[in-house]
Length: 637
Ligand code: ADP
Ligand code: ZN
Image (cartoon, rainbow, N blue to C red):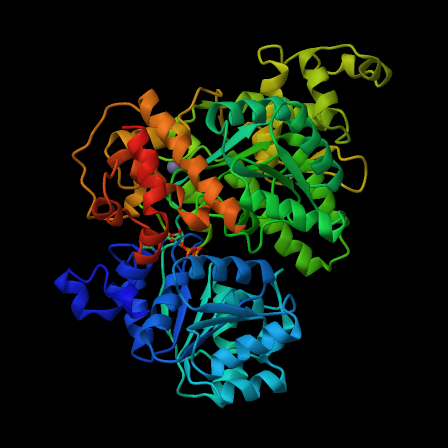
């Protein structure tokens, strides 16, 4: 390793600080981000830490850098085989001595890794929790010089979460047997309950807690009223993500299959993923998604845990998630690399109804249902809010954002509200006068004065409300009903046929004692997409948005808009990356992240010296890849 560490040592600051030295020479980054420097210094000194950081925040470096600075082997507990494999591939690519131990290795391979541990020929070993707590492995640990225990995805210890892994409960044994070896537990789970559980169950009550903001500023949040979900989504993809990888979440397996084959018919490469597919198909699809460049994964929530592909550029929800926690986690899979990403959801009345139905029909006890109901209300409130969505989201997680974010649909295209008091009275009165049994479709017919068969059969054309709603369109009435439900003036009767009923809160409204402001359905405008953002990035002369990458990058090369030549270079660099990745059987981002390629377009390094200054280019990657990419750049001179 020694030769690697000497590369960027010309800077006197890093010569003083071995952590910074590792960051620069091995990982190719110029500075720590957020709390990384504090966390890493604390752990290197031998302290225990609980690290709470959002996805994409940079958790891995918090144990990988100490692993290379402290003497001995760092044991990383990781719950998923795919995750371990990807991390180890990426580390080896950087020239780090890393390996994993899990059921995918045969006995001889495993023994090889174990031998390397005991001999100290390895810096990081990733281990599945069930293996870690076996007597055999514990004995192996006794014979190994240990640098650090890293407990990744620490929320797996929570019995209430959906990622619960019983073996995590036994991990306190590590500390009992090796009290002087520091521990760092990491998670991106945002709620306070889980945090408390992690501390208690892992015996980390004394650990220093490093809590970062859970904001994901590079994700643009959008919720659009559902009109024709497929066409809306297709338009969104064509406009913003014609060639990007992303995930589309659907509620049911059948819908996953439908949407995925429909997208393929539309000329978009898409793959299905759900628990009903045979394991080998699921695994193959996941692998294609990770190694491919522009594949769309259409999936149920079964997909996502342990996917650390950094350039997932969008996450769409065709059906709403079941809570804001789930929404945050699922959308959080976009934009790990810090470049602009989109979270897009389409949402309509029928979704509200079916979510409520599912909830009320669940087997869970009443207390549990009440909690779930509260979570659903919070989600609906988020969908219907006329204010900044990021503020609503962060607020829900106990964090406050002083100003509206400027990067969600309600900020970018401010929502117009209108005095909906009279409309609400009419809508509620239609519910009341028809006997609180009907859903939006029939009620809107009554309001619009449509004498359908059903209306005539029920003699609803004789009601006072018949035809009083001609001032609004059908779509506008749908929006009114959706908002009245979201605001809690109406509930959906789930015992019967899903008709509306007035709530106590609806009474003062129908009596005209309370005003109601409603949001106008936002017009779906042409919007700025990621492609545009990348273009702005390149035209600024580099340095990734959000201040992710190197400060050492010159900003002088401003170039106006992305020229055809830049575009050609960007694609040529991606092709070069794909070829190198294929040859090694690794995902393209393991070679270089998009942010590094973008810097190449922006700065067009001419020689190895300039190439070495790109963010994400450490000594090893400089050695292996500089020539190939410099050639491509020269050809596009
Ligand atoms: P997490 O595990 O918290 O989701 P990762 O560790 O995968 O996040 O890091 C997210 C991305 O940020 C990765 O692409 C990583 O290389 C990059 N990154 C992390 N720390 C830094 C840093 N100090 N400078 C530049 N990029 C960084
Ligand atoms: Zn906002």
